[in-house]
Length: 246
Image (cartoon, rainbow, N blue to C red; front, side):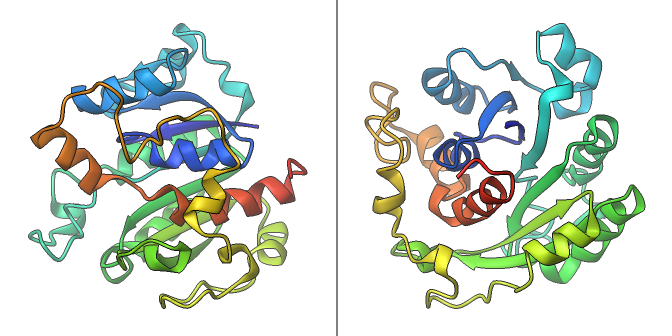
C-alpha cells in the first residue's frame, strides 16, 4: 500500500505509516532543512518542493506510479487556524487545503488522512468534510491528544480520515476519539516506545536525533511543527488492518 505525503515536514506522518507497513512514494515539502531530513531517512523517495505546482503529471515525470497511490496524507499548514495566529482561516493566503484538495481530486486515492491543530475543528472542518463529500468521500474527524499515546505533552490534534466508500467508512470508524489524555480505545494502548519497536529502520529515532544534521533554529522549528508519529499511528494501523496489511 502506497502513500503520497504532502506538507511532509520532517516525516512524522510517513514514519507512522511505515510502522503500519505503508510505503511513502513521494513527499511534498518546501522547507530546505526538512528536505534534508527526509532525504536522509528516505533517500530513494522523490521530494517535490511546491504543492502549488504538484500535479499528477509532475509526479509521473519523476517516476511515481500514481495509479498505485492508495492514501494521500498531509498536515496542511496550521497557521490560518492556530489560536497563536490570526485565525483567518480560508482568508489566509497560507491556507493550502484547496491545493491538497485539488491533488486528491486529481489522483482519487482510496483514503485521505489530514492533520491540523485543534482549533481547525472550530473554523474549517465543515468545509473540509464538505469538499471531500462533494467528490465521493465519506469523512470522519478525530481529536487525538499526544498524551494519549504516551507523550509528555497534551498537544491536541484534529485528524480527518476519509474513504471513498461511505458504508465501509461508517463500519470501520464508528467512534470519535475523545480529546482526553486517557486511553480511549484498544489501538491507543501502545506507548510511543512500544510502537517505535515495530520499526528497526530508523536509528537513531527521527524525532530524537538527526544524526549529524546541525542543531539550531531550523531544527527547533521543524520539531515544533512535526506530527508526533505515535499520535497518528492508530489511524494508519486501522487502515492497514482494514486493507489486510496487519
